Image 1: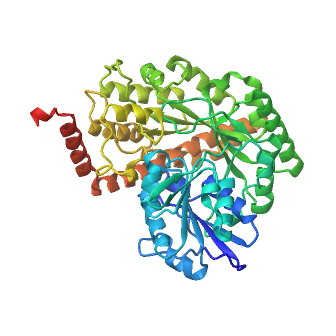
Image 2: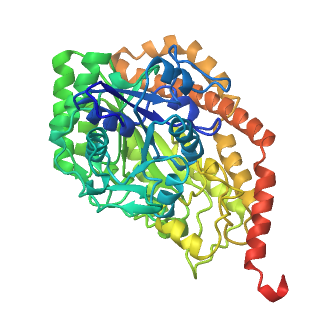
Length: 529
């Protein structure tokens, strides 16, 4: 990189999803927090101009290529980037990340990537596919030190938390300690995101998670920033962008009860002071429903929706996941959230593999029935059901790999790692095809065409909600929940229909057949092949 005094440009890219999926619609209204945070850190460096390109939310006058994706050649013509960073937080976007990396590297641009995907052998794989540097773990400080070294001729080997190739060998520098002093970091600057239309803004509070779920890649001791910093993030977005809708992205809302209560009280006071009501979504554990004081404080703070990882209504699967909750308690706890006035979004994993020595003898039809029954009884407002994903670095992946059950990525590549496709041989007697069909059956029962009639019915009865003037707010909430849920369920039906059509046109079925054959051959003793 030129060390002259001319200004340089850093472009941060969040790669596009490989195909239309259940996340496509919401992605067009939000953006990932990680790329914005990293770009914001770079933007505070002298002589650097910074921008973020979110390929999943790329709408306002952004130049596009023949595939409808961002035209990076035109972007380079308009605003030449000296270094490009790429967000590798989602394994399903890695093929696109490599495509973008190779494009820029071929033009002499320094390419850098980081994110949860880059662990173990994936680091070397990235360096072999267009990346000059891989940032390990958190990148807020590493990226700034790396760009400074590149600009001044410094030695990247002196920078902690970095991987690169030197003299044909992969160099791994010492690990960088996790960030604990968040006050020294700038607030994420969403003005850096070009060509996007953002209506749902992500907010960060806690990094790390101590729940140790077998399937999850987020580990380590939880590290929160201050309550005041979280409220400042929201206040700045309201003042600068007119933002009203926020999603606190951490899985641990309510983790520190006293601080959570203080946050809710401060946020409620702020909204009262500016005479504005916000709309906030959080991810929270189901057992927090027992805390009446916390629920009341959350509602006063305009937290309207809770996202809950139910994972499964089957006790054996919960035990295998290291989930510390019993199915019989779930329904009652969900009812408490509803009684407190929250919308509930339920997240599930279907077909979780049992650990060695444990056999789940429930037929697949009965499993489907149990999922459907649980969802109906709990009256969850919206659902998301996915298949297990052997994400890089998780205990689940290590267990399945040791059993030689993960389909070879020569056939089932990273682009399928989004939870909508079977990625390993399931527990006998289940088949991958049965898992895939079961997913569509559960989601198809919930998101249905007939919900359209519910939307129309609720519009017609809207005047009737004004009748109980003694409790207009209660009447409004009941009407809005019914109208909203029918609207989303009809919209979900459209999404599922489109996804199913794309699935049938795609090549996954043939790839899955070849992957199963390869696994079968690998498991056959040499003398029997």
